[in-house]
Image 1 (cartoon, rainbow, N blue to C red):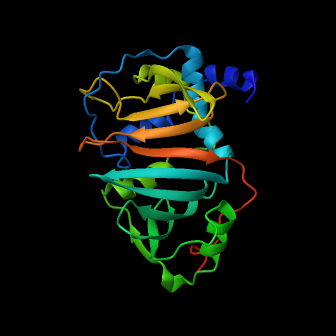
Image 2: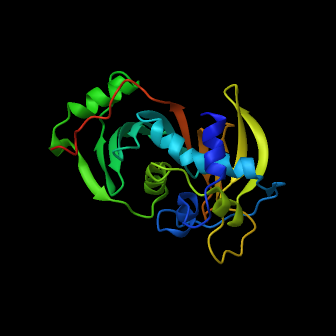
Amino acid sequence: MTSSVLSAVRARPATTTAGLVGLVVSGVLLALLTDSAAVSRPVTTDEAAQLALSRLTTYESSPALVEITVPSGSARTRVHGLVDFRTHHAVGSYATDGAGTGGMIAWDQGGLGVAPDRQPADPGPAGLAHTAEGMPGPDWSPRAYTGDPFDTALHLTMALAADRPDNPQLLAQSGARKLRDEVLEGHAYGVFSGPLPRGSETAESHLTYWVDGDGNLGRVELRTAAGGQPITVELKGRRLDTQVPQAPWGR
């Protein structure tokens, strides 16, 4: 992403509600902040522009490979997914540590479909797409989202992208903060706490974002009211050649 794009984002007037602000006040993320001792400071103008740009760069990364981790007690459920943020469709495989259970999953903005005991022969993007495409409609068990952490993680993933950047001034005014710098898999990121909900009595957001200097999102963590380990969404591949299949939505 060029510096001219970042400059344009910085110059946007603070007149609309930002998408990242919307994440913390909508029904998508009904979670409360747990105690945190992280040292933080308000974002600078450039940092606010980076954070604001992250939803657009995520949208433009489609199709993208994501890794979602949902802790539950001593176990973790992992989703290996192929996401098209433009069409709001995703397919993937899931498995739970030590449970011997897993299967295929498809999700969008409105809900999800699960196909237990089905796994792709090839765990890569092409294998995920091929397996989902070849499954007949009755193989999927569809349902709406619930407040379950697993559902929250899938719904959060779909809310990470938009076809335009957020408003950096509004992000800064809503309490976005810089926590630290960190390297993930050899790539440098700034780590930010997201904007606060309106009327929040907490010191920090329950959402943490890893965003690089070009506004590319690497990771998002959500801390829930239950405490413990956070839900994690990581972007592992961008602009892949494999497309998310029409199935099961087209059936």
